[in-house]
Length: 577
Image 1 (cartoon, rainbow, N blue to C red):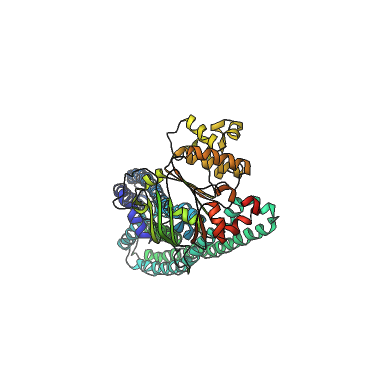
Image 2: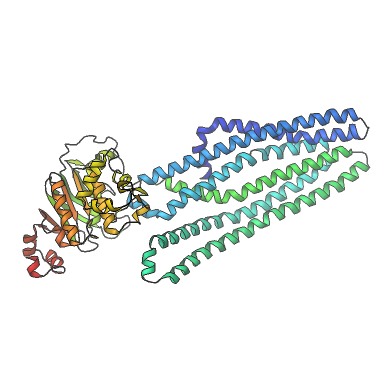
């Protein structure tokens, strides 16, 4: 999976990678040539007392060293740029794929896990690529070149290499095989820490209201301890790596000096050659150590690559149309025919055979007990998820065949939990219509009964809004979300229990202003509060995912027991009449 990910996203950077490999090859060749020059200086210059030979070859060594430095700097430059570009492209790909997900896929992965995959997991793969470009490319060249040159110096002494390299390989392989499952478990525990931390930050008010500080501290301590224990276990294995490698290296150096001394004593080898052989041995071992360092990173990067690829390979259940409808009659006629929705693997569907018609100039209300499927029903219209049965039609066209941008302009949804983005009041209101003027923004705020409190804010339209709108109240967030949809001016307005945080006076004033503003549009309101929907042109009653009644308030009060129970749970018989 790691190779597949790297091959896909490094393909556009073949040219800089080619330059990088060339520069690494040149600098490695220069590194390998230096011990041979040093051996010549010792054997032919120092032993014979030839100062001129020492000076000329010393100058050559300096020149080669400078060339090595230049090549190394160039290789690191190309490697860093390519690795950074890889990280950027993978993050963008994950972000784009997540943006295409429906609510079903987002819920499947979970927001904390998606954040970790987009940030930490991508960073691990990027770091592996950087280390590969700067270390791993030169390691095999240095290892093979060192072995060849060492054999050229003295074949019998090279028997030490035959014993050293396999031992190092076996030690590294055994440790790496145990690291991979540990790294996977560590990433899962990192997801858990992110989830717990996000819940605690988001639900800070609830925690304080119920005085659950100690309980939440224990939750975080448990998740944090599990991550720490897993990291310590991984660290213990990693801590074995370098001592084992260094032990093998030092023993091999002792063996080379021991056997090399006997070779020099017998006249089969010169002192300079022994010095060069030791240098090549160190270069070979250094290349193995570089490979070892890479092997330490590979298991974690491989796990991260699998998690990234899992997101990239997940297709949204909301599939964009191949030949989208790019133009509608723009009347705002909404019709739902026999629509049903079932989550994958669920025993029972959330919605069953829903029929609903909402016409321009009318207000259609949907009411029902908690869990009856009201929000799910509204989510089918803007394709937050697609109906598993039946059809959802806008102006006679199935929403699954309408161009997503056109559908977004036609349908405006005010969600049950309004979300405001970090920025200003103006940037949030212009989210659906970037070209809206200040006058249009104030008009929308006035209709949404939000003008008064926005005028009181320092800066007015330029007043700062915190992420999630946490610096304004719940009712103010709802009114700003309604104003944002009004700025968009769609043909179909969907209000998903969007008045629940408003007091009765504000609710009444807002609905009165909305009725004038949306007189020619189609309005669908989901509400728990009977007072909000009792004057609707059509009321649809849902119960356990099915339509159990349709009509006006007085009609349903007379012949629909489910609606009557809901009304009488909020109003007296006289008020209901």
